[in-house]
Image (cartoon, rainbow, N blue to C red; front, side, top):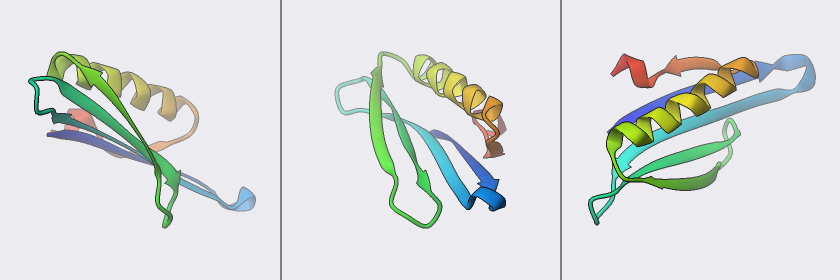
Length: 82
């Protein structure tokens, strides 16, 4: 299982957010990219994307990670770290 975790803090705006991406196998030979995001300390919103291979799911997750970094999120753990 591969995952990435990002946070964004903007104290003047009282913004403390997280974004988590996890790639895991499904029960039918498919792979899911689970995205969870929200305010730190609160339950997040979950979305799943289904992919045919783990590489495809990781690539999709890496693209999302890159887009979040452009919006100011800091990577605390990355797909590349594993």
